[in-house]
Amino acid sequence: MYEFETNGTCATRICFDIEDGKLHSVKFENGCNGNLKAIGVLVEGQNAAEILNKLKGVRCDNKGTSCADQLAKAIERYCPSSLLKPA
Image 1: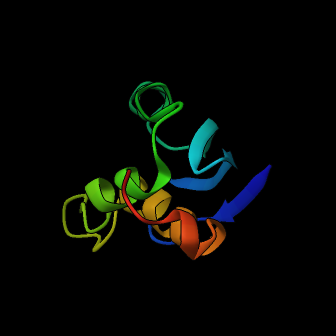
Image 2 (image 1 turned 30 degrees about the horizontal axis):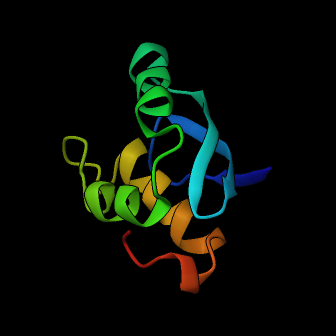
């Protein structure tokens, strides 16, 4: 299980697994509970590289980042570059 401390968002941490390039068990701590649970459900079993490409750069108001963008940064940090090629 990977843990990523977020920066600039209401959520403070993201925990997740990556197996064979796929995301599993994505959980956010704090933040907008329903929306963040929905992100976890939507990305479950999805290709990490594709999720990174879809979510990277998504902004929340004037924060310069968002919980989705922070998930992309977490994937970028922990997923081996060889797996970050979209399927």
